[in-house]
Image (cartoon, rainbow, N blue to C red; front, side):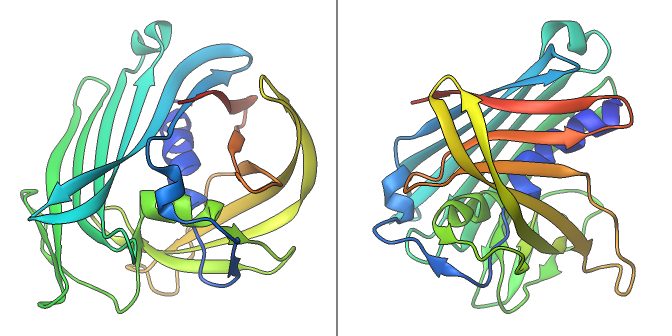
Length: 251
C-alpha cells in the first residue's frame, strides 16, 4: 500500500504526461499556464491521505527567460505516522521547445529514503549531468522531454480516441518510453461543477530494460473536455480500494 501511495502521486503527475502525435489545441501555449497553481486533495478509501501541488512561473536561468515548474507532495498527518512523504521537484524548461534545462529533486520518504540531487542538460555535448553519487551521467536521446513539461503538453494537445500517444521522458535517473490512450469520456462532478472529461490511461516502458515491459500503475487521468483542459481528477486502482486525487483549487 505504501509504495502504491507514492507511485500514485508520481503516476498522477508523470505517467500521464505523454504526447508525440496529435494536434496542439488552438490558442494554447505554456505561457497560458504561467501563474497557475493546481492543488489536489488525495484520499484512500475516502480518507484524506495527502496533498499535491503544481505551480508554473516565469524566471531567468543563465541570463535567459525560462519556465519554472514547481511540484510539491505532502502526506497527511495521520499517514505520515506510517510513511511520511515530503517531496519537492523543480523543473526549468525552455519556454519555446519545453526541453529541460535543469531538474532539481528533493525527496524525503519514510524513515530512510532521501534523494537530493540536480540534473543539468547539455545539448551541445549530448549529455545529462548529475550531482547524485553513484549515478552516471547519461547520453541524451534525440527527442525527449522531462516529466512536468509533458504534463502541460498533454493539456495543450487534442486526442484521438484509441490512438496511442508516445514520448520519451526523463525523471533524472533514467529515460522512459511512455504511452497513453484516451479510453473514453465521463462526466466528473467537482467543486468547479460537472464537467465532461476525457479519460486518459497511461502506461510506461523503461528504455533501460529493452524488450522487458514494466507494468504501470493503473492510473486514469480526467481532463476537462474544453479549452482549459483542467486535470480535475486522477484515480489509481489498488488491491484494496483506490487512491483518488481531486482538484480543490486553481490559483
